[in-house]
Image 1 (spheres, rainbow, N blue to C red):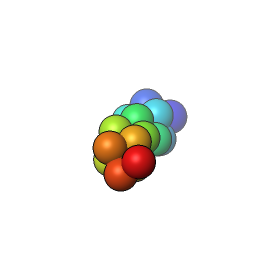
Image 2: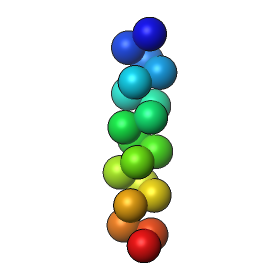
Image 3: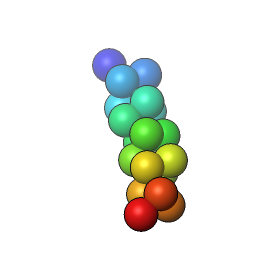
Length: 19
C-alpha cells in the first residue's frame, strides 16, 4: 500500500512543475 502512495506522490511532484 505504501509503495502506491509513494508512486502517486512522485508522479505529482514530477507532473506539477510541468505546468
